[in-house]
View (cartoon, rainbow, N blue to C red):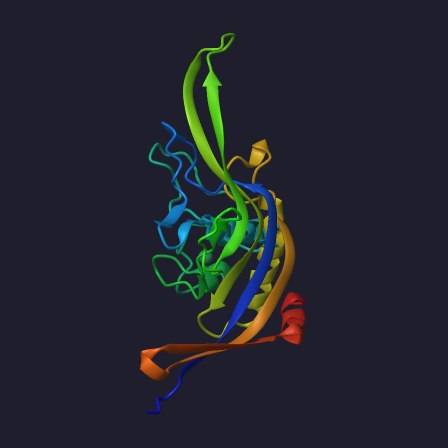
Length: 254
Ligand SMILES: [Zn+2]
């Protein structure tokens, strides 16, 4: 029996990142409940965790470089004032999505809003502990631990509350898929925002030394992924990738 191959061509950006310590969970959870990063916990594969906050980090980087370059883009908020009437929007930004469709800014063209879907997609970044023996090899092995903290009543040893925060350290790769053909200018803006990410930091507790990231490598790639059904219904998946050095250089020059 012969089956057709199903295939798709697309571009992607691969970013290799290193962090000495990052906390991307939903903050501290009281009562010692520290599973807020957990995505999988089973007998066969052990535990794995999701690295959150990457899209938000890219959004913040975009806002920072747009401000530096003096171009107006969408703010992450779609409101101009808070409920109590305080001005929410800093100079140089418009409410998220308000530029669409007449004067669509570069950030909206890439990231979209509720008005229009995004043209890039983040692959989930799944990590597992280096100590995990059952892991099947998909995902990144990192140091994952829990910092237990307690707040004490000032001037005494009496504890107000105990809580644990999950943190991780090591290397991981972020894959951003381009869902359609982006212009050189758009790819350039995306790459520059990625280059700016270490200035912002990942996750929480940044002012306490968490969330430092170091960019190790950025690749722009052409990918062809194909899939077919082999013997006994087994799926055979193939991925061919090619680095686009020249296009990356040209995009960065935009
Ligand atoms: Zn906009």
